[in-house]
Length: 506
Image 1 (cartoon, helix red, strand yellow):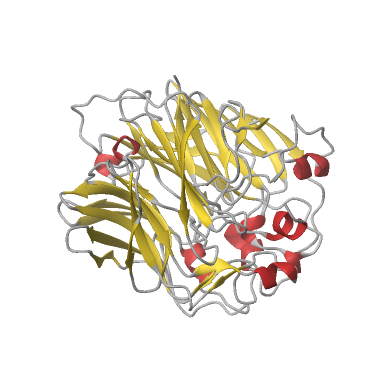
Image 2 (cartoon, rainbow, N blue to C red):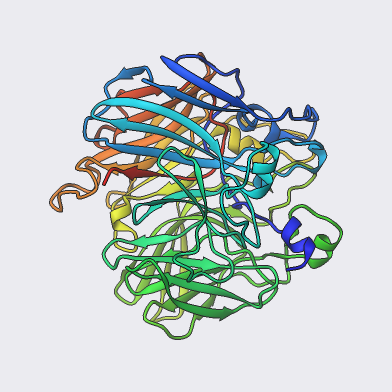
């Protein structure tokens, strides 16, 4: 792999945000220890929205036990709530910073038998992070090494930190220590993705992988043995970014949108050499899961951010997803993160395979991101979905050349009922930056098949502006607008980041 590819290719997710906000570290835990990172240079005050406020990186690794709780943690919540994001370590030149390239840091809360046993935050130990912290690197250094910062998932008893476009996943232990790179039992060759789809019914993990020097993207299927059992190469032009995709019971849905690799920008040293390319047609592709050729359908230019879920409906494929209006600038326009001309909205696309057309429609035009669903229904028809509205994220994405937008946004978690076409909002105070809400079934890792789809809890990190630190917010999904069941008070901030998962006890 040539040097500019390793150093400059986008390693982060396009179109994201999560929880936390600028404040001093709190000291609310009964017992806490901290490890400090090397001192970071003071960031520039202008054109750096992703180094300030809700996005400001933390500088310490904390460990806190017996966390204080307002309310009661449900006794059925036994496991770990984990969420990751970029948290740049040892930044020497803020002008070279890009939010999505920050070193990955995982934040986790351990819940058991109604108690919040601990909070930890840990950098993912890539070779570069280990070197900055003065530690030996755990295990061999992967060829395309990076401190994965975009997603963290459970998979067959393992915890994997994920990244797109190159790096192997990193495996973590139950206390968030880095164990080393993970290649699915020596079966993964080449790039992986941050947005896998796990079909619990088939016991298959699916991925769409892209890489800037490929003339194709790859559909990967990891089977029940934990090995990559099938790889399908799909020809594409211009090396597009495929940040997310969708999965149904019979199909894989690909989004070929006009954000493409710019070799000239990479050669010139651009930190994120992906650009909006008006000459690249926007299209959506449908690939049979059983194998075969992709059918492509042209669509109006748009940036596909994240999929909520997808399902088959007769001869149609239905996808619900968040999109940004075109053009979307992954590398930004004079700022240290992506910029957009509008906020993300929730849409529904119906791909009519019989008629050969795509119908697009807006489900909710309120600013929102991080769509999630009950994970047991990935690739199947669902009724409910959950999104996050984060004022700080909307403002940062609309800030170009250091000028924030003249608009007011709010913070809320939103529950959508797609059967009734309604929604409920759990509103949060100004300054209470909130991230992705993950749904957790009330009946543990083996839910009652007779239970309602929304019989469970939604968990998210939210900043408490009064304490200057984060809380883990626990809502009853069936009483979404009601008083939180619990707020677990963390000892420090959780900066705005990306995605996470509930890792249930076995």
